[in-house]
Structures are given as structure tokens and as C-alpha cells.
Image (cartoon, rainbow, N blue to C red; front, side, top):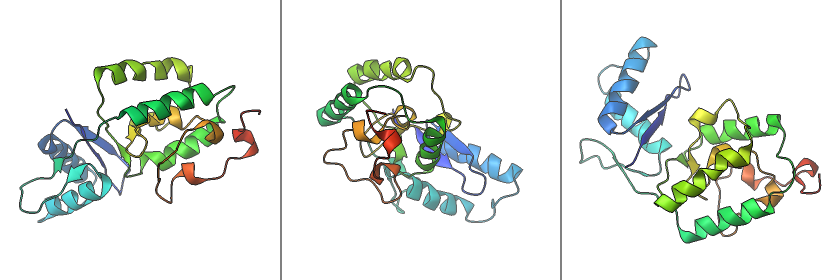
Length: 188
């Protein structure tokens, strides 16, 4: 089952829904309460924003609503994830750095819901133990990265030199394209 996700640009409010219609109704109520655009044609403008924010949404103006496109975890994605876990040694990046990264990821269009098999869900339960209680203020707005399929609330804490990004291309604004700093070094 796909989950819909939308960030209201003017307020930064994050909306999630299991159907387009439920998401639309929640966004409309928020927009109305905040005094934002709910006039004639608002839904078309909402759909344009929704399509820009969600790569997994197929936008076809001949249809009455956008529809989700499936994003799934592959064996290569799992291999990269396991390699990254094995490479991660020592402490995570600082709280400030994790917050900076989470801010970037929370508004990125690549921040999406990614489907996996039941085994993937079992592995994802390890993330909580791996993080040892580390959280950012943006955790509720973080899903998975549609480029690498990683759980972003975990990935923002990892040192750059431990992350296996082989064969992946991130958008220019992504923190993963930055050069590792001394504090990212596995020896630090």
C-alpha cells in the first residue's frame, strides 16, 4: 500500500494519507484554516505541487487525480545498506550535523515512501536499535530516500565515509554529495 505525502510550501506542514482524496481533504482544511489559497482551481495547483514533490506520483491531466508509482527495494539496495552498517564504526555525526541533514532531506522530493518485502521490514526494525535513541526534530517528516532506499532518520546520522553510495546519483542539493569532513572520518 502506498502512502501519499505532501508538504504545504507556505507553512512547512507535512501531510500523509493512504488515499489521494484523504490527503486532499486534509490539505484543504489546513489551507482554509491558515488563510491560504482555496479558491477556484486550488486543487489543480495542489496537484501540481504534489507532483513536483513526489517522484513516485504519476501525473496525468486526463485522470481526475494523480496516482502513486511503485518504488521498491532491490537486492542491490539491501547489499548497500548492509555494507554501510558494517562500515559504520564508532560514534555518529554530531546532533547539529544530523539536524542539518534532516532539514535538507525533509523537504527533498526524493524523501518518499519506499515499499519492501517482509524481510526488509524485519531489517528496518534494526534501525531503532542501531540509532541508540538518536533523534532529530525532523524525524516525523523523514521517510526513505528514493535514490538509495535508505531510512533517512538513520542515514542522517551516518558518517559520509561509511556510506556505500556506489552507482547512485543524488540531486545537487543533497548533503551526500559533499566531501567528508574530519568529523566524518571513521577514525574520529
